[in-house]
Amino acid sequence: MALGALPDYPWDQMVPYARRAAEHPDGIVDLSIGSPVDPTPAVIREALVAATDAHSYPQTTGTPALRRAIVDWFARRRGVTGLTEDSVLPTIGSKEFVAWLPFMLGLGEGDVVVHPVAAYPTYAIGAQLAGATAIASDDPAEWPSTTRLVWLNSPGNPDGRVLDVAALRAAVARARELGAVIAGDECYAELGWDGPWATEPVPSILDPRVTGGDPSGVLAAYSLSKQSNLAGYRAAFTVGDPALIARLLTVRKHAGMMPPAPVQAAMIAALGDDEHVAAQKELYRARREVLRPALEAAGLRIDRSEAGLYLWATGGRDAWETISDLASLGILAGPGPFYGDGYPEHVRFSLTATDERIRAASSRLRSRGH
Image 1 (cartoon, rainbow, N blue to C red):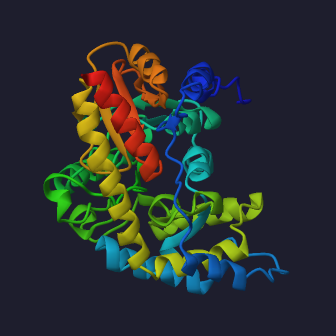
Image 2 (cartoon, rainbow, N blue to C red):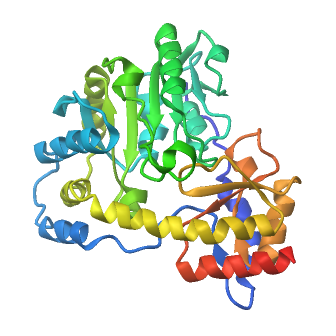
């Protein structure tokens, strides 16, 4: 099946609101797209510089040192043991992996890709690229017999929802019953805030309590963009069933999907240093503690948001009305309709703005609230 027309890029709809927000006398506060604003840690930049003599083609599979660093990181930070170098594969950021996974798995017409109700739009685009059908559902009992790929997202974008071990285990069991691959998008896993996630690690879909120690049919996707401020590096990886990893590796070799060698070296440095991750989390915690009460003072209710990089809020009215009001305050946010049909009144606020801009947003919101 030939690729049909794709929908317009949703963020193009925000251009007039961005123009209005930019007219604010104190400048725009952009809380719309979660693009990191803090510096890339020196330990990572130094590793990149040291690897810039990259005259040879990089390895699609990743260097042995990178594969070992990923395995060690999953054991140390996610509680996932038993992985081997054959269980991991670096990717050129996580968005390309999300978009191309249905195609790389050989899905097509008649196949269903399930994704969350509140969802990053690339899950559905990936299904469309492969000629498959995307269905939004958070209930494993609803997943049809034609399901061939299930996407979970925990912590969720945009809503910050965390799936506990029991929920992950039920989803994996249902996917296996259907003969479907199940993939967990876990890019925000280091950013737990409320409830048990204030003190406990966010569980991985590859946690032995979820899989029973058997990764068959299961993949996890992870990005260093958020925890290490590497969005510009396009540094990510997938981990899981070695048979699936082997298939993906073959496709990626043929397609030339090779992470650059200096980036692979930088990833090793990032994965080996937990200190910068903890420091970055504290920056986001402080911004969250300023922004959340200001949103509430302005009459917005925060839903979910127990983890991740965003605050998921509603004013109880059409999201575009809230977006318009925010633009008049010089604040740009993300409309809930960008993340599916289930949240017409929600707005997503990113924590990726400087301390000064977060304080400016807080001041404007509190002024409006009074």
